Image (cartoon, rainbow, N blue to C red; front, side):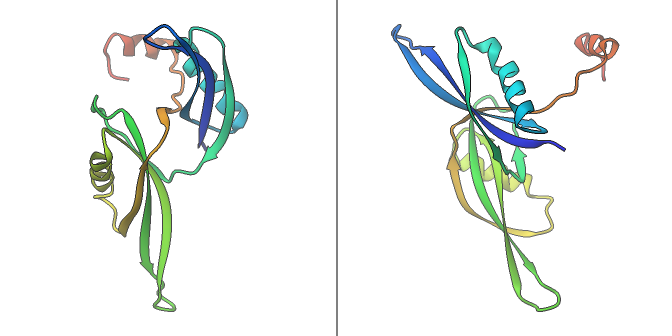
Length: 160
């Protein structure tokens, strides 16, 4: 079973004015363990780096759900805390459970809309108690390598 890992990558970035600046960017990958997370983030960012880079930090990120979109303007990730209220049948008391989710959106309002849309099918009542923009630049989901004959067909536009 895969888990989410936040990975911080340090590298030197050339700015528009020609100056070189050391920077650290945050990415999210799903992996089985820390070792695989480091391998995966290295493979994902290497094509975009011109010089040397270093995976500076990896930490487990506990997100109950990610709400994706294909909208081009949705270039930011927002972390939200959802509180679900359930009724304990034995005692009759309300029980509150918190879950952290991640939503891809262009701004805060769009993030709240994305979460509400994603939660439409839920049978549980929930409240969004907080929403904040994260430093996450991109999210890399695990994709199994397709067998060569299937990958070739997919490249030609056939259904896989």
